[in-house]
Length: 209
Image (cartoon, rainbow, N blue to C red; front, side):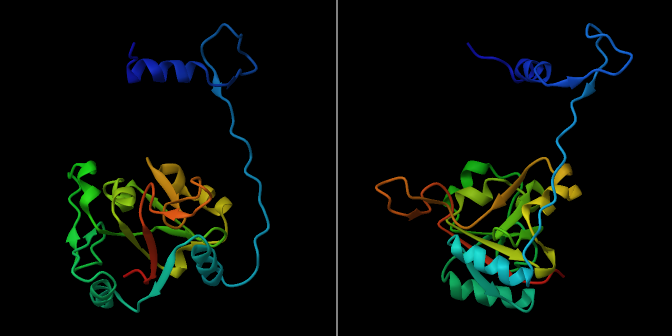
């Protein structure tokens, strides 16, 4: 028996914890949402954020590259992925095919290389933060074979706690932290990359503008 999305959401909202106001009886309908827990502040390691980000990214199977400007991106892509026309969600990759945001997400399964610009990087984990605004089509981050992520070193924060405090996180309809390529070691303890997502993830140091 199927349940409509609206009916499901009604049940979810009814089960949420609420706080009664001082002048309110439990049988009354006006209630305040239950407050979220206070996010603690943790100490972060000292040192260069860019260096810490790179070390953690590589430890998770990611790759790093450095470019001085967007003009150098076309040559780097041609050398790194010869004979391939990437699909890009950012206008900075002028040599790539622009992503059609109306494209059916499932059709991205045959794309070899996808390019996006991350809004933030996290030094603590070597992760990049992306939302629906950066992806254009969210499936771009999962169905392509190889994902190239442009990142300005100025956009790196220390830890995950800093990301959660940013207004971008609260306002995004969809947000994800990507840490390295897809990988699994469940089968006989052998590490396999690309089993459930991108086969490689390369972060390119490239200043905005």
